[in-house]
Amino acid sequence: MSTAITFSEYGAPEVMRPTEVALPEPGPGQVRIKVNAASVNPLDMKIRSGLMAKVAPARFPVIPGLDAAGVVDAVGEGADVAIGDEVLGSTAGGSYAEYALLDRPVAKPAALSWEVAASLVTVGQTAHRVLGQLGVRPGQILLVHGAAGSVGVIAVQLATARGITVVGTAAERDLERVTALGAIAVRYGDGWVERVNAAAPGGVDFVFDASGAGVLADSVALTGDADKVITIADMSAQQHGVRFSADTADQGGQALPELVELAADGKLTLPIWRTYPLAEAPQAHADLEAHRNQGKAVLLP
Image (cartoon, rainbow, N blue to C red; front, side, top):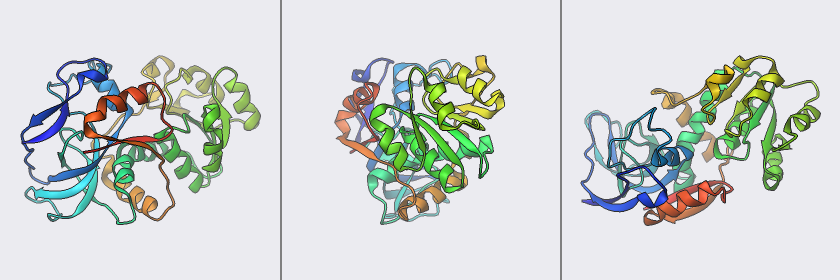
């Protein structure tokens, strides 16, 4: 037996509780890890609260969490890793736990901290995927809504490294941080369209909405084409003719090893805001839902 955070009903953060669960057993191609760090993602909170119930109904009890990093302690048939290897990846069956299963483990370089290793998985793959879906090219201008968020931070860095000019919207407190990443930082909120036009008087070519802040209609107007706008956070996308980019089964095939290498070489940064013991997962969710964070929250089992 081991300890995991579980919930058996939708609701506020307090529905999550430490629970004794059976050790998960790895299937073909899987590995079991002793979790050293588990990332807290916005999707975790949407699943826990029931916002995703119509799209993907939960099978209770649920162990939340998408990403983890740790040390391999059991190997399924065909998995190309060894017991004792340090790895990271997407979990099968939840990551808020002392032990978790990974489907496609990626080796963790020694230069990468456990906290960053766990945090890079979903947000990094998402940013990489959306830039590919948009097809934005060097010399073009990309507007990123939510540029100070975990996905936005990586999208800004990947895009600027490719020679793309990035205009990023963010809160007043985050403008300097977004500027330091190489973007033209613009304060979000009322009047953001005018501020973006001032920052990019020639117009923007594409928009990546990582904020879900009701910006789609104006974003379509800015580009003149709904096909040039993608959101990962606004469920009203269809009403505006905008693509909603969701997880795909093969998204991590090539992206994650590349992202890990960039991060280990110091070419990609992901700020860690705070770490929590596993039992304080409810507090981590409460802090993120109150927008207290300036970076990733990570659980340390």
